[in-house]
Image (cartoon, rainbow, N blue to C red; front, side, top):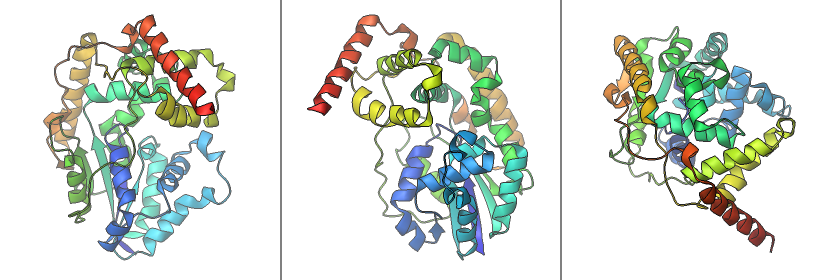
Length: 337
């Protein structure tokens, strides 16, 4: 039996890629220091999350061996005498029943089950979430996306990944509150490795001497690039969308062809949406303060900063989009030489 098993279930866009990149890069060193990442690679944790929550679009594509990956992770944890960590943001989008079943499996493998939730302020999450959806084939404009999220429409699924009190209610049910760890992503300006250090403290693992340079490239797109991709998505018939096409778009197309085709320019949360985002954030912080969870960081960092001056993707001009598209086509031709 493991001593403790930590399930890190998100939230999405809260530094999960950064943390997972470092955890897997330092996997051997962490194992020597008593922390096991069961499985062979991050994809095992992704497939496990898909199986736990019933993500049919992924599960239906798995081979017979991969369909057993969750049970393999549990078995590896059970055979480890120290601490173990399983991490993927897709766990957060699970029903209460699925979460309870997963926690029961983990309880059979470790003396203590702990939940870890990383969380970032909504003012920074919303632009990132829209961009992520565009990479997955979404056609909805940034303006309409924000309006849909504001109306709390279920088809966006945004709040299932970002309603932190709801995630804690589903996943924390039955766990002692001191074993539910809420790690706040610090505000811009904090030390680059602050989130890494905070999570290491929760996990109780010594990360002294482990470098914190991310291995995965920054996959963020500029304002113009994201809007160009959204317009490309609109030209692809819905019936031709597939998992393979989504992987191509998020991978080689966005990373190798689209990125840096336009000047780097982050986009902002429009001032017109600042009020409700602030109100929703204040309610969330109030609920979290009322809980008895182990909070690492300052909950006030979940209150969005005042709106910044800047543009939104809806304001990208046709001339800018044409210039970026021309750069992308030139790169495609160059790759074929």
